Amino acid sequence: MGIGEVGEWLRRSTVHIRANGPKQSAGSGVIWDKDGTIVTNAHVIGNGTYSAELWDGRSFPLELKAKDEQKDLARLRVAATGLPSTVLRKQAVRPGELVVAVGNPLGFTGALTTGVVHAAGPFPGLGRRAWVQAAIRLAPGNSGGPLADAAGQLIGINTMIVAGGIALAIPSATVDEFVRRGAGPRLGVTIRTVRLSRRNRIGLLILSIDHDGSAAQASLLPGDILVGTQKSTFTAASDLVDAIAEASGRLKMRFLRGDHTREREVVISLPVQPTREAA
Image (cartoon, rainbow, N blue to C red; front, side, top):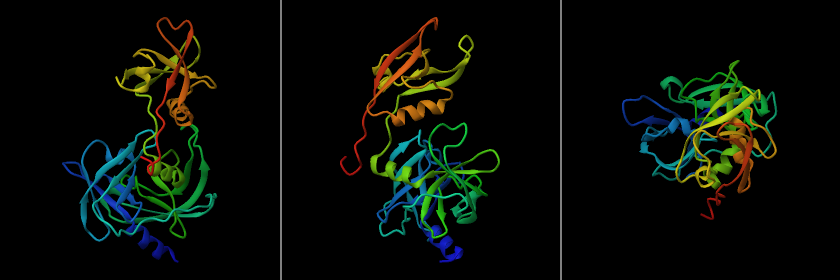
């Protein structure tokens, strides 16, 4: 199958997500299955109401089913069946592979671009989570759209552009887990990175706490500074995201309170998410 055919197939399994309001086109989404499941980035959806325009011009309102802002993923549904869904790739992605992206950059519907895989794995400064890193030309509006291999199999969801023009996509395996299990556990805090001058390191200052979240149940308070887990010290906000994702029900956290002269410890219980099939 040539690139033209691959592009046409990807266009059929890609939707144009539009905001219902004064804001213009919001981005792209991928038809995950023939029953109307749509996957996109959480930042594409935001907190508004949206609709999805299909390849054949039909438009449907989107119903939000799950959103994980830490993973930057959202699962939605349109009231349509028999849709041309994407095909997931099973094999590992290798640097140098040809990749194809389809999306709706700057309002242009179904734009196709090609490039090559630069790397697969963590990106410096963004924690330990894995990314498909591609040298490919993308623009605002590509977010949430597919990154596929030369056979048209999905390898990731395009998410952001970083320094040097490298595009980062959430690996399809991560997306598949989210679709099956839903959003992961949340600590329920708003944080800001601060420098601890006396300790010459970074801390995560808690600005606010959700009253019914895991942090509140563990008696953490606004003003506390998270400095690490039992095993590691935080160097960026992404380290907290990684720690929550890797925890299995319980997370032991180190933090500072009051005059910051001594570290305290707290054990936080994180809800375990059931699989989608068992829910």
